[in-house]
Length: 327
Ligand code: NAI
Image (cartoon, rainbow, N blue to C red):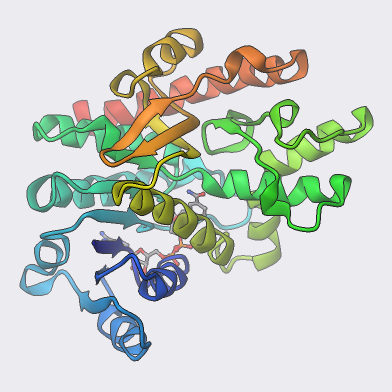
């Protein structure tokens, strides 16, 4: 299993690379960034784990060397938010960065699982899909927007109400997109069931939707979530790798191109969104089945979903437009 981190020298990239270096599922790890990867790779190379690690910069065909032979590429490249910024404000810079990296994937590792972390995920994943389509290499089962941090936050924040000792034991589908109102936690479908007092539900939902802002504010200009994101990105990457190696029964919400995944067509019709995060069953070849959880949303969640659809459609079109009619 060869894993690549693109944007590996950044706030997310470094701890994510550390977790992948320590992961026994990884045989080879390539770190790619426009700066500092030789240092990060040398540092991590002293860890006594299986993965052989190398760092690459753009010079000397570095991107090609990093991506060639990759089985999984995780992309946290791009600028993060500062206080007062929305994820959409990042579009101008990150759209081009993601486009370039995906062109590299299409050319050098078209069969790899591609996990996009770079924001705005609601637009960067459609960009990635368009770039891959243009190159004739689009496999919707292998392109994922990483929305796991929203799931992790929902698990964590609900703990104050459930008192559960280990918050990760509560499974909560968080669906839709990955920004503000497009993030829809379905607490009514938590397993085991959770009882949320009515007067607490708005605050809890809002905290999941805007949890990223808490971190941006607390870091006060020094960036957005990096360590919790590295944990979440790793958690998702590990599930994709385990499924690729044959483990069954792995389900995790992720932002996918619905018409390309079994069961996704009906969800795309119902939501009016071609890209959407839903619980997805992972298999050897990637996204095996999209699970429709919309029907069991309660009235409160249905209202949230309406707001989600409206916001998400615009974000998706913006990404597609960026590739089809370049600015
Ligand atoms: P950062 O600025 O610390 O790191 C980004 C890294 O990307 C830098 O090392 C930079 O040199 C590198 N980079 C820039 N252009 C590149 C290119 N063309 N090729 C390769 N590397 C390149 O930013 P941070 O905090 O690590 O965040 C990265 C991205 O992740 C941001 O867009 C942020 O909004 C997003 N993010 C996504 C989350 C999610 O839940 N999906 C959560 C938190 C952040």
